[in-house]
Length: 303
Ligand code: GLV
Image (cartoon, rainbow, N blue to C red; front, side):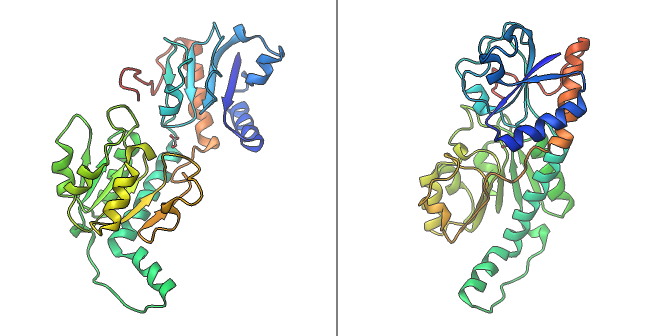
């Protein structure tokens, strides 16, 4: 079976994926877009594409394509490709190792915010020896935006740790009402037209003074100027940001040095080829056997 592996992967990443996928699916013959363009493989033979944010146009001219399997959980960039073939099913990545990593990152951020560890880190840099009040987890309400695979896993992990957790999805309660009761907001929404820019001045104003944001979704969920204004005004205490409107975050951006911002380089949860390859293989075998495909994207919802 002829398969396309396409994405903005460097050579080492591509090799890791190719090795993991070959081990999980020995019957697969893996090709790159370059192979197709140079005539080393027939585009009409490709039945499925396994993609990690491929450059726009990568999936054009594949008449036999019957599945686009993303290696990324979020498919916003994939769906933004205007040349994406219509009618070909798209599957998101749901990788158990990635979901577990996301729950760990959320737990780290929430714990550090709840106990004031980022503030202690700042005091160390300032040479200040001073304690603040120690609070219990059950005193720190957390709102988790997004109730997909990751949002649910994060909500469960935080609840198990003793935090009062309110999970929010877009078709549920009004967002402002949920934010009004939260001290920490963890964002794990998919990026769609309906969620882009959702975390704006109005949302921040709805939060109680001293609340914090943990953005593990997409940078474009946040209106950056509004977030910076809320942090500068002291209304928001801290932001932990893994994702940015432009990645890598441009040099000189205020987030790099802002005392109330803790950054990760889009590393909260990486797809792990060792476990994700098995997920890909299962879907490719389901395709071959005419069985139901897992984790299909609803193009009308965009996730
Ligand atoms: C990471 O952000 C992903 O969508 O997989």
